[in-house]
Image 1 (spheres, one colour):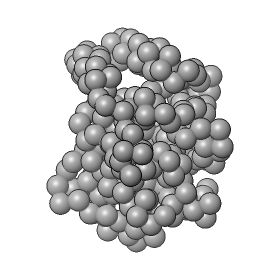
Image 2 (cartoon, helix red, strand yellow; image 1 turned 120 degrees about the vertical axis):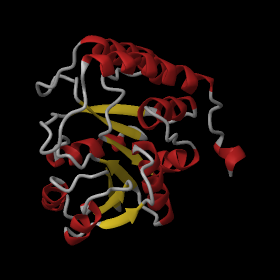
Image 3 (cartoon, rainbow, N blue to C red; image 1 turned 135 degrees about the vertical axis):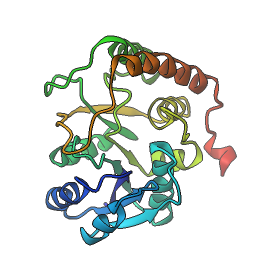
Image 4 (tube, rainbow, N blue to C red; image 1 turned 90 degrees about the horizontal axis):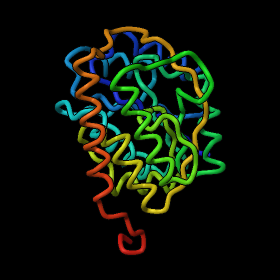
Length: 237
C-alpha cells in the first residue's frame, strides 16, 4: 500500500537530516513528506537534500496546522496510509511498521509510550492530565488507550478523509480534539506499544509551571472536543 510519512518540523536543523536518513533505511518503500512550519533556519534545505518532499508554510502554524496540510497532501495524492513522526528523533523509526500494522484492525493506530514498553515517564500535573484523558477517551473508543497525546500515530484512507474534514490547529487539537471527534464520527482506534527515545537535539520545554498549564488546557481541549458535531460522511459527500 502507498504509505506517506508526515513530519512536521520547525527549526530542527540539528537533527532532521539524521532522522530522515534513519527513516529512509527503516521504511524504504514509504514516501517522506516534511511540512516545514515556518522555520527560520535551514531545516527545509536539509530535508530536501535528504530526499524528502518539503511543503513550506509561510509562517508558524503549530503542529496541528502542519499536520492538516500533510493530510490534505496525502488525500490529494491518493495515499492508502499516513503516519506522523517527530523530527527530533524521539519516535523510533524502527516502530513505524508496528504502528502501521495496527491499521489492519482499526482506522487510527497510536504509538503508545505508556503500554508496557520502554522507560518513558511523566510526573505531576502532566501525568494526572494524561491519565484522566486516557480514561475518558478509552470509554468513548471502547478500547484501552494509555497515550492519548502521542503524536506518533497512523491513519488509513478513512481516517485521512476524516482529518481533512476536521483537524484543529489549536493547542492539543492535533491529539485530543482530532481523536475525540474521529471516534464520535465512527472511526475505530487501537494502540501499539512503542519506546520513546531522548531528543536527539534541542532543549525540552517542560517545567512544573507548564505542566500545570497543560493540565488545565488539556481538560479544556477535551470539553471543546465533546461539544463538536461529529462528521457525517454522507452529509459531507
